Figure 1 (cartoon, rainbow, N blue to C red):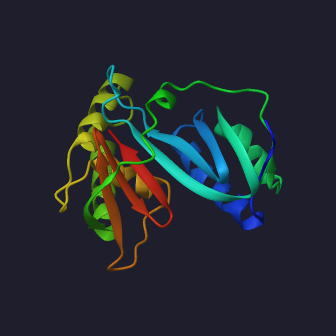
Figure 2 (figure 1 turned 30 degrees about the vertical axis):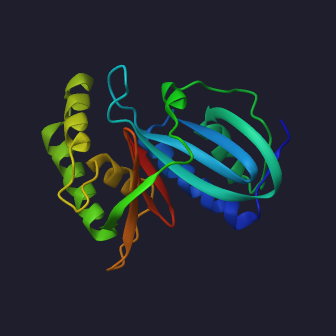
Length: 209
């Protein structure tokens, strides 16, 4: 594949920040890099979901500009990209090691989304903080992985009390990835298609099913 050339150093720094936050959620996590024309889409997994249909799956998406058109679609460990960006590079060559996370096959559609309303960023931030506290209190140190997984599934799978309601996992993803804007009055856009819900700010997108 032709190397990806990011638009500039600021673009590279923004991408590095996003991926660093995603890596904190899963130190061994992966990123799907999709380049179409002069836009790069970087997908990461916030919550893996459960069951055959990966119910509760939450994905993060950040798009950025490329210096020249390219065609890419590959999954690699996040560390393989952050290591390169940390050295100040604006060009990404195809990493020698790729990955195949299960969520790659569940990437949402690009078109056909229906707008359903707006939700204040401050409300989403409150939902995220309350959920984080609930998970921390309900899963003390020593809790088994299965118990923790069940609790996280319950907390982040339920709908918020906002209008329109959204899965709480979207609020968690937006907060964890740094996409929320704490300024009063700022609102995130909500769209749906089939089993998917997408919540977007000008910093990025979080999608769940």
